[in-house]
Amino acid sequence: MAKNRVQVNYLDFTFTVFAKYDVWQLSFKNPNDGKVVKRSTKLPSTPSNLIAVRKEIIPSLVEYLTGQIDTVQEEKEFTLDEFAEEYFELHKARVREHTASKNKKHYHNHIKPYFGHRLIISIKPIELEKWQISLKKDYKPLTIQKYRSVLFSIFDEAIRNELIQVNPLSKVIAPKINKSFDKSENDEIYPFSKAELQNILENSDGYMYNFILLMYSTGIRPGEIIALKWEDIDFDRKQIDVHKTIVHGTIGHPKTPSSVRKVDMLPTTEKALKLQYKFTKDYEYIFINASKKHFYSHDIINLKFKKVLMLSAVESRSLYNLRHSFASQLISDGEDIVWVSRTLGHLDVSITLKYYTKFIKEDEETRLKKISKIGANFGANFLT
Image 1 (tube, helix red, strand yellow):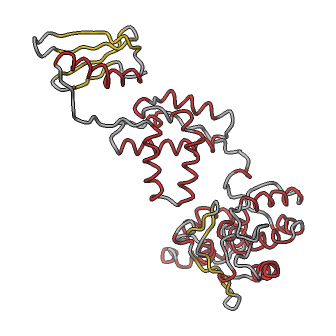
Image 2: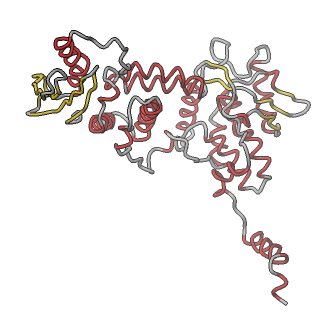
Image 3: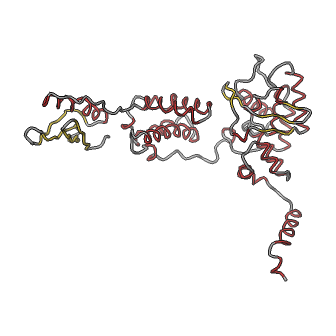
């Protein structure tokens, strides 16, 4: 429902538009005689009819009374679709290309069909809440939040451009995410145990064996692995040059500036690469698809990985957990966390600790030695 009363200025007239008996009414002072005039527009008091009153009825009435029309261009009122087009042009320059493409796809598939034709100013919280509820029939709360985030950002941009005053989606409670949702469908850290990895590798062959072993022994992201070329591998210095990624067929920069890095080659890493070299030594990319070109994305590898997990009787989870397994196992074994952080491509150790602190373990003997060492320095003078 639109506002019950709005004021509209047009030339020398000031109109009050208000709803009465569910119909838009007009009230204005005639500048010729100073008398207040009230008229019914006979239009139902809906948001779209309010626009018709402002843009058509009031100009026509003033022209009838005075013979004048406002030649000044009225400020444009955007439909959501019109403004979204402007927004996504700006969005491309602010985020990585694949992120912009994904968000635009979310808009066209899940937002535009509901609100694309509507003026931004006319979209109300109750309609947005109904939209969220309708999505629950087919999508999980986490997925709905992704769609919601896109629309929320569009509304925020509209506020910055003074098209609306309040983000209507801010008045709608986001769907609650159930913490027990399927681990295989999210990025929750759920690493494989050593026994599980042994089982997984025993049930893998060909390039899948080599891919799994490479990712597990380096923590390199799957999109970064499919972007690797043989020229990025230095067997003499035992290093891998990670400086690009592939997302939806597009070769671009890694996730963050710190993700551009040199990754040390462990013996298991070298084994995986030398095994793969037998398959693709005559090609540019280390991992290639059936067409002998680089993979369009790692999605197909993730699907094959799920089949390997099923064959191995290992609980299903995403390919990304091979990266988590690399980090969590090394940290649990007490390896240098600075080295682990740098290998993962994290900006600093605090990011690594944020995600993997729970995997830092120590036995009782180690704990007691640590207490003794710390205690020898801290507050020792108070013990005498």
